[in-house]
Image (cartoon, rainbow, N blue to C red; front, side, top):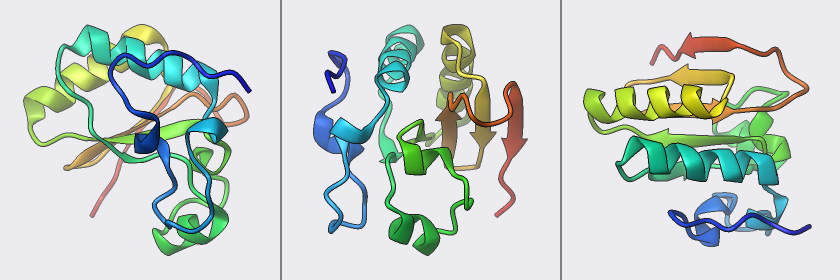
Length: 126
């Protein structure tokens, strides 16, 4: 599959964190990567990817949903070290069309998985 050009990210940022399965950039959805790159440009602040594609084993290890968009390459989690960065990230994500956003104290989940309920926002309680 041909992937989109990423101005702000490196392909290795999209590797499954298990370190064993080999899933990564090539398994990410082109639409998500393009939207993420555009959101980063609009936000004007760095986005640090903390989670992207996940194999089933790693998804279970981190407590991911059984039907997680991460499993199919439709989701990323981005670190948000400050509330100002969190605000800029969420605003830019909404502006470019992300329709599923989860907000935690240290990261924001972005996905555009067409198989999951659209236009939803949630808060992670940790």
